[in-house]
Length: 517
Image 1 (cartoon, rainbow, N blue to C red):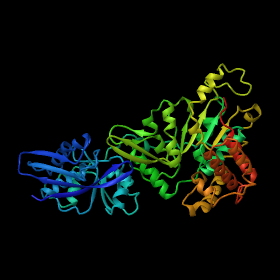
Image 2 (tube, rainbow, N blue to C red):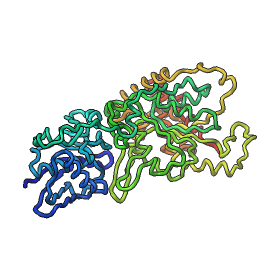
Image 3 (tube, helix red, strand yellow):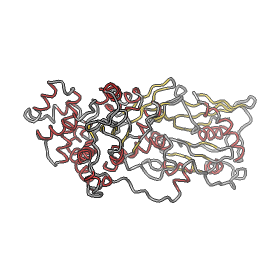
Image 4 (cartoon, helix red, strand yellow):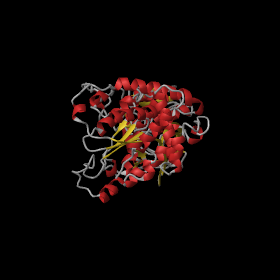
């Protein structure tokens, strides 16, 4: 008997690695052994493959089949290896001809149909980067796999049809069985006709001129934002409208975002790239694993990674666990989450805009004169202290949102709409890109201090007020740089080439309007 060899892809986070699948048929009693650090779901492939091959008209050998997944030291999980192992076993028994450098990614059903799996997009991206352009997937995953440039994708519904195309004897194959792929959970709903929902518009927000301007500045420079105010002031409404102000994602960004959603099974049989910035709004009872990422075995992405290139909104921020909030400090700086677990380490991109919303106190009435507030000063300090100083130091804009007055509330539609503001945001982003492209950056929020105090250094008269704030200890060194970034964004929105002293003052005001007990 010959040795069968095919190829698959193992995903560790969003990074994929080519796995060489070897199959050997021995001379001993029937058995099926899978080597190479398989997890429980991969070990179960033995029974799925035998039944699928039997019901496809090409039963596997009754002798011992040994499947080896190389490299053996790389952990492998999931049912996406089923098809590669089955084709390697059929090659070893000469039931099909050579498959060359084709990569197989699909789960097998007991009846022989090919079922879709999660993470097809990042897996195909990894295969193409490694030089394996020929890809075979389940028919339901074909549209998603074809999003990868350079991939030659073939989608199949059954193992029998696949074996026929690779040289199996058609007289024995169950080719008359060609089922329609069953929709995955949520796929039927996605394909059904649903009324189109109008995206939230800034025109719905009455008044709140300062908050609207702060939201525009946050969108233009990709800055993080904290909104503090009483219940009903419009904090959630404002946060929900931030994604609508952001520009569409570029090709590389859209591929990153779609790959994460594919890994999370948020897109079933995707037909196109995700072009709009995502929006994640986890509940305040969410665990660290739900927001940061985790789970058994290799860690999976959480809400922070799903919000990559978009907005992560934490409503009622002081109600979140302190360790969950503090865990966001690292991705706010690096734009990446590296999760270490006993089964391995996974890295996920997490360059999101953080929007925090908080009440001024537990009862929410410590606004204005605060005569209706029932909270003691100690309760207020303890409540707001859940937002740690190091976390707030990374939030560029910290704004108080007051209640809407009757005069403002009685003028619906008097404010600018989302499209008008988004046009100014796009123009500001274009100015940033032209200025920062030589430094390998796209937005003001990404500019490091060495560039702000180097090639983009402002004159001493312009930064005098900022220098005094640093000397008095009002600002940290990180806060100093973040005010400069805000000033550059204000200049971009004002179509000015360089920030003026007024821009520094406005930026410092946006930075220092922090939560007060």
